Length: 358
Image (tube, rainbow, N blue to C red; front, top):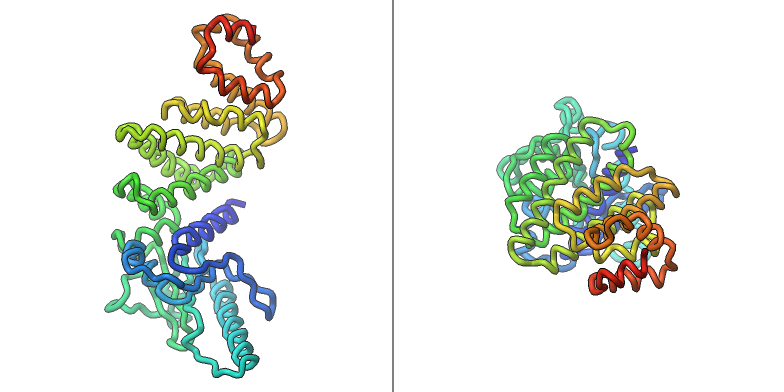
């Protein structure tokens, strides 16, 4: 189910953004009913500039926190479950204080942030969740003081730079607009690069999961993510960062093959370097072709053949009508010989090339 793909993205996304300023535990268990906390964050190095860059998320991360992100609107029972996890943590802290013969201080209890795309007025009213308009932006509702919890309704957040990193965890048009707003950041912005890598991984998972029955919302999300990578690659080219562009395309291809086929075999690896040199347009066309393959052993073999064929096409004018034979002979080579041959390919003369593969 795509919900689990989005859940994994949300956890990895929060982990990447928060790890520079603290310790992030993904899937932390609490004991009473062995319930799992999505993201448990403990600040260690609170860099004011970095917190400011994260905007509202940085304010949330200024103290120990639990983040529970939901892809779909949170329900009454799910909020109760989140509160149960917080109370379980409180019980653990009290037991620890007794073991250490110290006094429990409720200031140790983390703040619970429940992240949901939408929430009805009835749901918020049932938990007496109220905004703090003087201190926090619209869309953030706080429960009673002793509960140390808040519900963040992402689709109600103002579309400002301060809320960008939260709105990327939204849904539908809100998430798509937030992704589009990443394009306004500098192409070498570290947070933009992190977000793009995670979004591309999300896109790869969605392409695999929804290739047969794709929901319109998921198709729109896939389409919203794609232009940013084209922009990132083109920006690298325009700035003359050829080495950076190649490294980025290699990373994208590795992630894509890993997600689609579960592993990258040694023959696939042999072709990664030359394909990372492709133009942005050719590279995008190749990714699209791979995305159309079946996710099984036959598809894996077709992917290897497709990679090999694209590498040989760089010398198509010299191979001419023997290209099909050259492709077959290339794929027959043992892995070590194949790897060496691909490395030597740019330096081989036309006669050497035809002699070895013809």
